[in-house]
Each structure stands twice: as structure tokens, then as C-alpha cells.
Length: 56
Image (cartoon, rainbow, N blue to C red; front, side, top):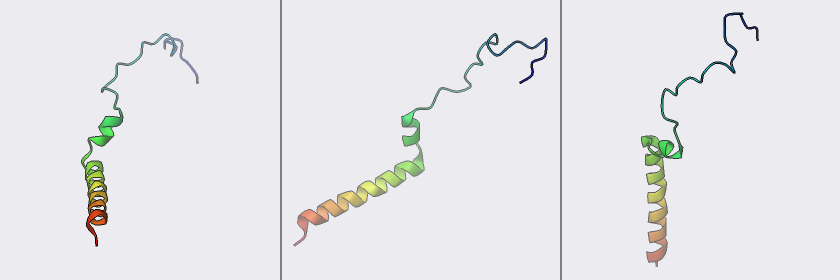
């Protein structure tokens, strides 16, 4: 990478401020499609468990 004489080196440049807060694992869980999918899977597991308990 070529550097022009008036441009500061990457080590001398201050870091850019973050535009947003970093997103963690809980950000993914707050997404509606994922929550709907997990609710559907949970419902299926619950229904099969209840069916298994009360079947003849």
C-alpha cells in the first residue's frame, strides 16, 4: 500500500468512533423470524411430549 507524504500512517491515525454499539448474541435472539422458528420448534416438542405422556 502506497502512502502519500501528507497522509498519516495507520498507526498515527486515531481509531474511528463506532457508529453503533457492538451487537452480541442477544441481538440475534431479538429477531422475529428466529423467535417464530424457535417458538414453532418448542411447540412441536411440547405437543409430542404431551402426546407421549397421554397416549394409550
